[in-house]
Length: 394
Image (cartoon, helix red, strand yellow):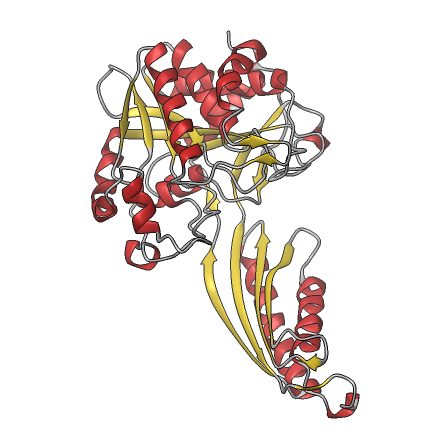
């Protein structure tokens, strides 16, 4: 039986990699990422699995049984100064399941899930699923001017080989992912873990606002065309238009000329909207477009909006969900499924193969921060759910 002590033992050698008093930093294609990969290979070898790396840089711990395999996995990279369990706990649980399962189980550590270095979230799983446009990302540069192409090459992964990554999908029968809950949804149900029904719908909107630069002290309010003030009003309206079950976030903004004595003339703004389903997103978008017309008339600021990305959400495979629900009930977790508002590799793989997720209770609801925490007793319960489900599915 998988225990908290089993998970703690597996985490012991992984946790120090990239960790400081400010949090965990294991960005993709770095020395810390390479060290985590070495941990992965050592752990795989200890339980008799063979480590292979696919053309996207995803790490596979492969069993001896015939392909295709059911797999359990997540990611080992992190955001800057993030938590120690995000992604890593899912890979650790994968090894615990593979070691004890009665059926051959592969373990996968997906490359660059966070996308923190090159803004390439779920890079490895998208490449595997044939959903990555390599030409759009390989020339991106990090803060030091290093391109993604160069970073991958230095890490021993041929960027020109990305086109071959989908061929590895034939090795995969389906995927289960365990992940720390990045909200308080599981904790509010007073259980160790919950089965996920699907991932939320998501829209990312890019906005540009053009006003007129002028003197901050001598320009009357009635004469101003203040791009930043208009952006602030748009951000507030985006929040007001969101129903209670939806979230809308202004996560990034740039201002020109960004001088303390000058009325802002230009703003770029990115909005992230997520909801249980696409209908709420569509209604929000229509309301925002109408609000933009009113805003232009009231402020004299030109506003241009475009949808940078749109994901209608992911419903996980019903057979997989049924197996997870049955296994959860066997662990005393007879609670309704929940919708997850974060993005995950399992959601990408679900577009091509049966997939499912279990979220582990996070009492504080904090993630992507050093304060992220989880009770490993809860994680062990969730890992046992995965083991029972995968044996049933296999």
